[in-house]
Image (cartoon, rainbow, N blue to C red):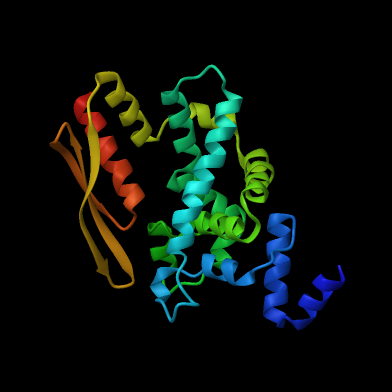
Length: 238
């Protein structure tokens, strides 16, 4: 307690407010504020130096950690369900739209630092990305077990409606994966083009099945583009 008070005393007013806000979200005080600041720093700001990087690396890490925790949770929750079912439900939990909603609930939209307009933020994957980056920051700051407890207690138990998720079948990537497994076909999402347009990136994604192109779609969010080509392919196959 004495050490914590000493640290808080040396922080600036903004850092004290930021640390308290993080505590309200996490349920505990963070140790490394720099990690959380990085989690909320969008790539549109640019990399000033090695100490002020964007949240892209933390997003990559958080995506993997979140996927692992959710996978274990579903594995134990549904002991008799097959891999296809588990994959589909996991995808509904960690897909871009759901992470966008969670990001807004946690107030991450007000913490995100970027050079994007409000319209650009909504149209991109910025809010979902910052959520994953935040998970990455918690992992780097506190380790896996603390991160796991945070995801289970503060995200899944408080903000997850399993009955609604089971009814909501808009995850086209999972639907396609199940169909391809059933038909024993190989499929691949290929990034045909990745270019920077102003402050954002634009992705052109192609879906191929057994090496044959099925659909292409262009979007500022790679995840949205992949969902869209999966949807187009499913509609074509049906």
